[in-house]
Length: 222
Image (tube, rainbow, N blue to C red):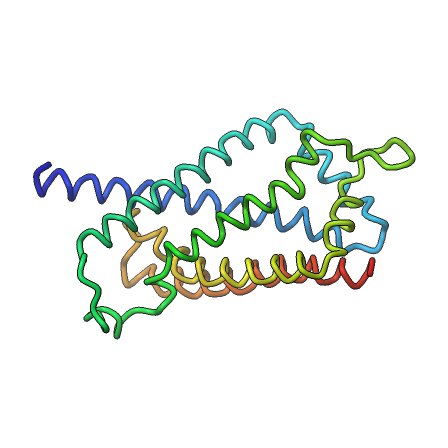
């Protein structure tokens, strides 16, 4: 492949990475809003209503397919770019020239992404698989995903795993949020400061709220 072809391929991959990243960032806000309902002191009633709506709404179920595709494309694209970056610098130096101008998490997106992939598989096994293929009805015959959540977060090891995963997510977003806009043409002095501030706030607030949920449920049902 020519240099122009390789450059074009790299640029298109980064555009796809940015678009899928923004899609997943939007999804996290929706997912967080539903999960925060579990913190209401109503026995999980509001959370179960929201979860049932998401599970049975045809539009949402269709978007769920797009979400899975978005995850897969984002992961594969990220691994490809990480591989190409490592291939471009096969010799590992004690200190790379760019390390003084970049953060450790911006240089560790591959590792952080891998940790998040492992967490995603565990998370899907805990909730999505059970909600789609298992029996989540309570003694009254009602679907009760809140009950499953309460049972999962009775285990302190699981709670710690979820909290650590949100720390990984925070660092991933600190670099990924702003990076998602760059290949889309928003890398400009007029927009970059606002994107950076918004991205930093998002990267701290969203993972923090996600981490609070298992901690609160653990102490509520311990």
